Length: 107
Image 1 (tube, rainbow, N blue to C red):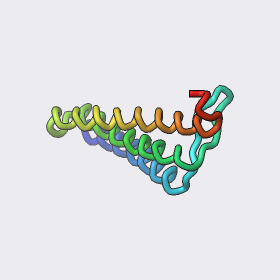
Image 2 (tube, rainbow, N blue to C red):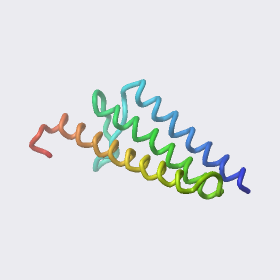
Image 3 (cartoon, rainbow, N blue to C red):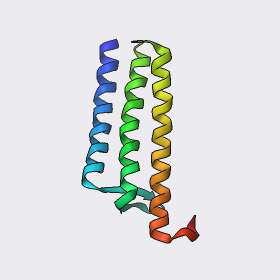
């Protein structure tokens, strides 16, 4: 059962890590807006790429904690910092995209 949990977590984490690498290398992404999503490019893409990679680390840490593999205290610390990087990356990406589209008045 542990192997299944870690395999599924590793598979999901790999998918999000590949997504982050693709967003970062291609320089294009999507942000949520009221009616679907809007394309972003430029400086706002790189915090989004970091956020996707941080989400991959969070998912991998959660699967390790569920399978009870490794030292829990260190895995929890890594999970918490990676989740903070995920949150900061997406918030920074949204702020930069809004600032670029609407100017400083919108913030």
